[in-house]
Image (cartoon, rainbow, N blue to C red):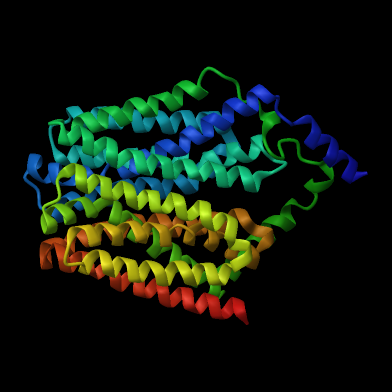
Length: 414
């Protein structure tokens, strides 16, 4: 009897085709905005240094500020989504991003830009988390395929962002114009979702089965027990460390490769921005390819391939004697990093299949912490030891990730 009621409920909450198409486009645009917001920041760093007379370590605080806002909102956003609905979260996130970028153009000091950057990070975390939920609502019959397609659009935004910023800056524009363009794009997200209703009956599991209510307390107790298991599970902790280092290095390349290539190899703003876009293109191609191959290779081999490959390629990027070889190294790093994040989630989900929500939240949080701390640390090292040694230190971090990848591979093989 319970099975029949669940089937009927799933049938009732299937959204009409036009609603599914509309919000599918909205979710993809959402992830495109996330890629755009994150990856337009790197090309602006030398211009922040020049316009505000700052050191690299002082400018690097903007990564920490955005990361702090993101870390808080990506965790809290899930709760807000369930309590108040998808629409209020995605519209609020888009508005926060647009408003803070517009205000950053007019504020009088760098300190105010940092304050606004924290709120930009809040908006980014809100729209990043809710996009997955919207896509799952709209495509519950094949969520895996839908989510893989969704995350391709992050790669598209990450590819377009540096190219757009480089073109504006190379044409004599300023960082404020880039902020304005991204702000307008974020308002487009508000325009997609604000006019249309997103009724609760479209939510996955919006109408809980009464027969399940008696098990709610038991589920909460099980979740608390699972959280303790996470902390005490060596493989889960290894995967969390991989997520931390993965996002930290991705943020470092996106944020500092422009400055590195300009200072070490005299790349123009457009040439350096094109290289960062190729790094994002490597991620895009790598995810498409590994999405097809990951089940055949196995999760352990995929993590091993990505962690060892990215270690070698980042060494090529930061130790290369020529600019073109360094650019190849950064592009290859994106390709090898591509499969690590989704595969890490799959490994942890296999370890704790009944608590995927908590697993995802904790691992995404670990990644957010890495993107907040590591690029800022590299900025401090640039001041202390110079650009090339500071960027070379990212190789040490990827050596740690490679060691963790080997350990996870051996564990899964056993």
